Image (cartoon, rainbow, N blue to C red; front, side, top):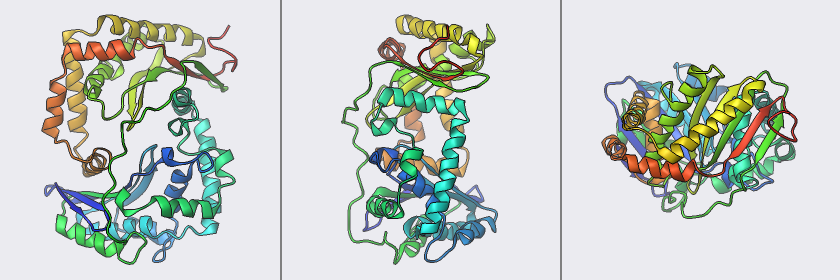
Length: 420
């Protein structure tokens, strides 16, 4: 793995994998939905759509056609703390991918007609999301935790924020936020680092990102305290065949040293078919098809929750079982056998997730952008192996004993849950 910092502060980091015949490329920008004001809620996601719509060199059709003509794929996604534009191609076509992707991110036109077209697309996307209650409930839960804090807002924005957003507002956000020091370009596959650096320099030449000397941006600070709401219940009425519930609380930040213990605990609780929640709720009682626990971590906060989808009439029983299992683990911890299994699941998932160039590229970029350094695979496995029963018991007693918030999406009155 090699890294080069351009004078502008833009970073290029690569991993050579000579045994592959492909290459994955990503342009990662350390700007996400939490960097938006309420008026601009959804601007980062709006940009994700618009940057593929045309530059001074290429039309939208040319951007997609040039990559697809060589059998490659390109796409993008937005999170609360960063945005990624990526491509995967044959190793011989990496120069093309660099030129197309860097051009799109650095020199987009944001044509007014494209803004209007994509506004309609995004409003349809928001409406579609509301038709997926299994996804919507996680947003409801996050909002229940963070309220009107930027972490609690929808990444997509809302119809109320997207509809009046102007092209000039989006362009101002684009040019003020998409600065070279905030950008990491990562690549993994059959490549040569020096060649990738030359390709990026060439693609950047003459664009708004070809700027003067600056230092790379530091990782988003993690010493701030995020204000959260008091635990409560939010019920969203939807005429669905299933009830979708998330029960949980504030979790850990990505800088918290206890995150490795939480990873083990998460797998024991709801990380697979051998987990406690899956066995208790699905295997023994057949009350739900899907039940799992999960954690989301940010620079200065995080959430930990348990999701279940079940028949509406079974929701109260499922919820009681979840609460009872969380209380049991908070009070008594886990068994030695579960500790071993939980560690194995964390390590296996991590290593097996690095079996393709795209995941290796993502690992490079996230490590640089979010942490400022790269933790080696062996070091990470060592950190997981070092987790003790006491570590898991402490994090369980802390998180799982807290009064949780509850999000429910299903055919219930919005005034209360469970149904009478």
